[in-house]
Amino acid sequence: MATDILLFLVGIVVGAVNAIAGGGMLLGFPVLLATGLSPLVANATSYIVAQPGNIAAAFAYRKYLRKVPKQYLLLIIPTVIGGFAGSYILRHTDASDFARYVPWLVLFAVTLFAYQPFLYKYIHDHIHAPKKRRRQGSPILFIALAMLPLSIYGGYFGAGFGFIMLSFLGFTKLHDHIHRMNALKYVCIFFLTSSALVGLLGSGLINWHHGLIMAAGNLIGGFTAAIWSLKVPSQHLRTSIIVVGFIAAAYLALRTY
Image 1 (spheres, rainbow, N blue to C red):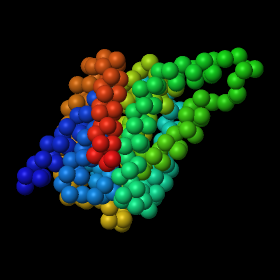
Image 2: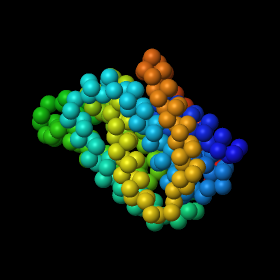
Image 3: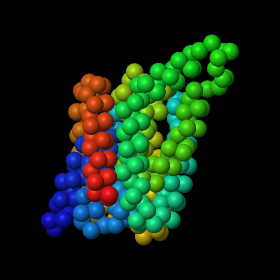
Image 4: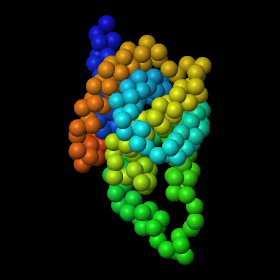
């Protein structure tokens, strides 16, 4: 009973952190490990945990989602394909190898988001350069193609994928609208998580008891905090994302090595 209460309360925190800054499962993942789950099972179970919060947060951001240009829904395709492919790789990964990979995967995602403004400037200058100096093509198509390998990462280790999603949305015309970016992020993460869960069905890696209890808390925390986060300045959201991400990466590295 005590474990169930802990999982529920942590689920609320995970949902709130996901809605405000992203990376909530970077906190929930160690808790699942502390309950006795192996790294592989804890990671697979995290997809169940995160899904209700993703739905609730997307609903809370619905006003901003309506303002997102329809062509950006193209990003759903690579997230679905990548999510399924990543979960397939996860099913065939040794537990000890997975534990060594996790800190570096998280660190990569957080670093990418921290340097996103500099990366955006480079992409922006390239896109708006004279035609003789740049290749022809659709920026959103390039983003969609780039999202495929990164969605494989998301299907392999879901925690931290939100950082990558926000980073790449920063290369689009949505870069000045972080709430619209968050709205689209939650929609894509919902589809990625759904495809990853399909890929994990029958694998025996999902602990449904732990996952559903934490997911119930996630639903409450995700919806409540998502509404509150709409009132938080973009600068504060970005700072929170970076701080939470680096702390989590450092913790996982110390725990593993």
